[in-house]
Length: 191
Image (cartoon, rainbow, N blue to C red; front, side, top):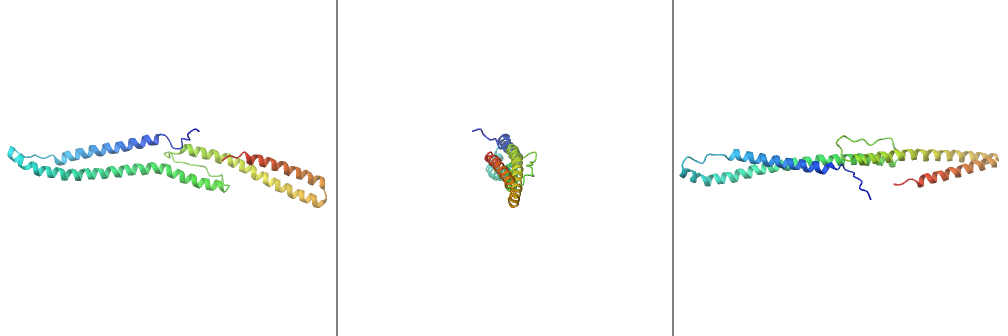
């Protein structure tokens, strides 16, 4: 069975690239911010440097926790936003298609499937639009055939009431032929 390729194949690649770019930006930003935030002079003499080193170690640990926590939060928010935007580009069209399928099941084939440029399920929309177009044509033919059969049955009844058996028989044959055509048309419909 051939894969349907419902979702644009570049989605995964674009999503991975966006996440990598966010993580790279956050990592570089946090390293740069950490470097400039903790860059201090330890002292002028060797003894002063040794004395301030333990204090500086505690400052580095505390500052690194603050800085990396802040940038991890920024990365989480950025990745969440990217994922929500990408899923919206899939779920939004699916909701619209669900509504359209409901309308089609009620016999309303007038609405077309319309997507935004950046929606990701265009192949599915095209397939749904093709199905709607085909079923709209078949629905019209079936509906018209049923109306014709109803008119013929009313005329056949009137012929029978008037005693015109031959004309009534012609109408009956006409109805049987239309019923056969309708049966054939209905059997060709595949879901």
